[in-house]
Length: 421
Image (cartoon, rainbow, N blue to C red; front, side):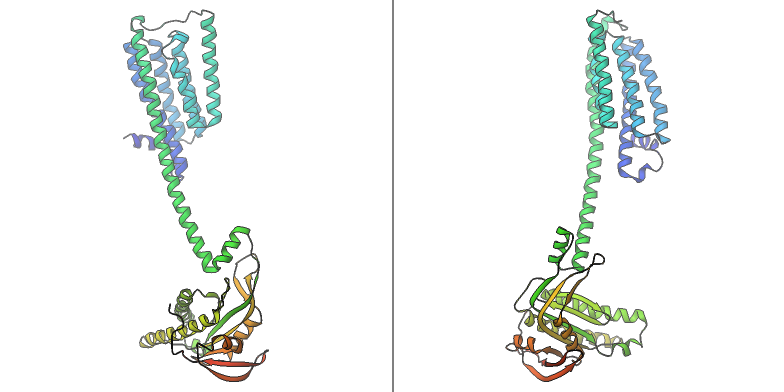
C-alpha cells in the first residue's frame, strides 16, 4: 500500500531513469512518513492540551498535500524538498515559541531539518537550513537572556509528559527517516552494483573483441599509450593459403552460399592456429594469411608453421568429406610458407588492423601461387630450418612474379609428430 502511494506521486517518465526514480521515491516517502508522524503528534498534542501545535501540525499536513501533487506534476526535486522543509521549520519554531522558548521540549527537533535537507536536496540546502535553524536558536537564546516572557500554551501539569513525548518523537523521527534513507542508499548501491557488473561484462566483451582484432601485446600497448609502433622481427614464418579454382567454383554458387562455405573453412583454420598460438593476420578474398614468431619472437616458428599447414590439410580433408556427403561444394588449397625478417604493427588511426610487411611476406605469397593443391610449398630459408624434422622434395629454381628464380621445396608428411597439440 505504501509503495503504491509513493509510486502514484512519481512524475510521468521518471521511472525510466533508475537514479531519478530513486530520488523521487526518497522525497515522496519522506513527506508521506512525516505526514503520518505529524498526525500522531497532533493526537498527542490533544492529550497534553497544546492547541497552537495542533493547528500548526494540521496546517503543515495540509501543506504537504499540494506539494505531493506538485511533485507529481513535475516540480523540481530540490524545490519540492525545500517546500517540505520550510513547512517543517515553521511548525517547529512556532511550537518552540509557544512552549517556553529555549526551555521548550520541542527544541531537539531543530536538529532534524538541516539533516533532512542535506539528504534530500543536497549540500546547498543543507547549509542553508542549518543557517536558518542556527539563527532561530540564537534568537531564542537572546530572547531568553533578555527574559522574554515566552508563552506556555499547553497544560503545565503535563509538561513532563510533553518532554517525554518530544524525546520519543525525535528518536522515532530520526530512526524512521534514517531507515528510509538507508533503504534508498541500499537501492542505489544495488543499482550501482548491477551497473558495475554490466560495465565489467561490456569491458570483457570489448577486451575479447579487441583481442580478436589485435594480438594481446599490441592491444595492451594501444590501451596504455593510445598508439602502437611497428616492430621488426629478424625471423618469422609466414603462411599463405589459397583455394584452388575458387573463381570457377564460386560461379556456381549464390553469394550467400559462397560466403557460408568460405566461413566454414576459415573457422576451422582459426581453431587450428589458436591451438598453436599462431597469429592470424587477415583474410583477403579466399586467401588466408597467418604468421608465427610474432608478436613474441620464437626460434621454432618454422617448425610450428609446417605442423599447422599439415593440420590445415588434414582438417580440409575431413571437412570436404562431410560437405561431399551433404552434396555441398568442396575446395582444395595451395599453401606457401617462407621464413625471414619482416615488420609487423598497426598503422592508421581508424579501423585498427595488425599487418605484416617485407620481402618475406611477398615471397610467401609467390610460393603459394607456384604451389599445388594439397601440397606445402616452402622456400630455401624455411627448408634450412625444418629439414631435420620433415623430409622435403626439391623442386628446383622456379620463376616467381617480380621475384626471379626461387628455390622451392615440397614438404612431405613427417614420419613422426613434431608438435602434439
